[in-house]
Length: 194
Image (cartoon, rainbow, N blue to C red; front, side):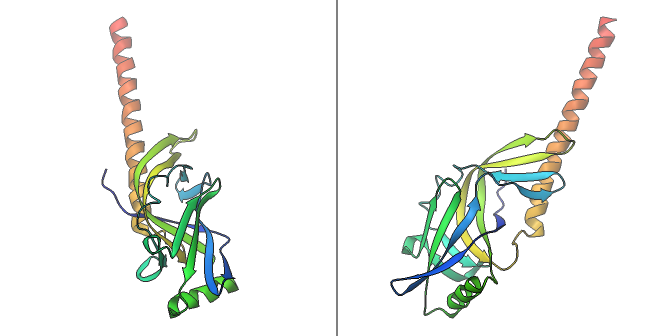
């Protein structure tokens, strides 16, 4: 399967705090078990072990997924990530010399920016089919995490939606084809038994 970098955005309870003269932004970038509605009967959820193999990678904290607006980085220990029973928690040390970072800090503090997102590749997923026609649920089992972002608007761009929608449509076509082949097989068996 060709990998397309994905992003997911969540409403979260970001908070800011000052400690020892430093400012921090913290909150959950991903929540386990919550259902992410992708539209058209397609949903997605994150397995609690999805991030197990990637937290040791060099991951960045960004503003609005912009690579030029780096807030922190795990290799510099200015971004710390951990997984708990609820999800992927992140804590970013705000650089007081960075105007963009200080502006974001103020926006989070005021409640103007409340959403977070993460950028990743899907390495392993499961697919479940719902009881209704066309209902599909993707379960992210293992991902490669590249970045986490504080975002103004959901970063769920049309290209990412269409990539997942196309995948779901392919699955539906395969299901329909398998159903037709099974019906044809039954009909041939019925004719030969007569």
